[in-house]
Image (tube, rainbow, N blue to C red; front, side, top):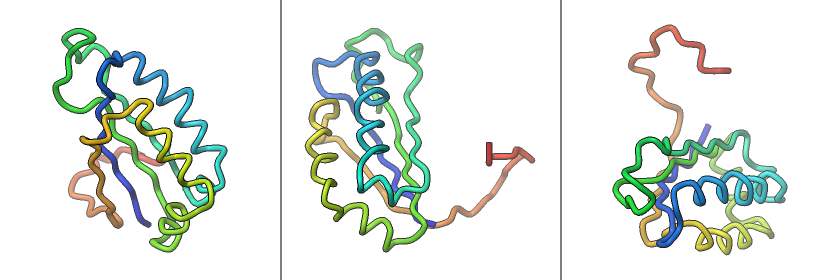
Length: 121
């Protein structure tokens, strides 16, 4: 299992609510219906709670985290090189501060504490 985790900052001039709406209603469906999205096992959007902001002009911290799961590194590479992958990248500047986009690829996690919680649901 390979996971792509991205730390997201919204683009300048966009409110937190506008960012979350665009991410959920435009970018998410774009990935879900794309050819490159067929390589993704799971796609998570983890938005920062709106109650955590000190107003619409609060630019502190990140605005969300996305996690995409792939069965293998080959599937990740196929996702990134698929024919419609450029459309995903063209969409990013519409809602993200791409100068502050951070991402990391990881393998299976090492579980240190799980608290007996069933994380599969």
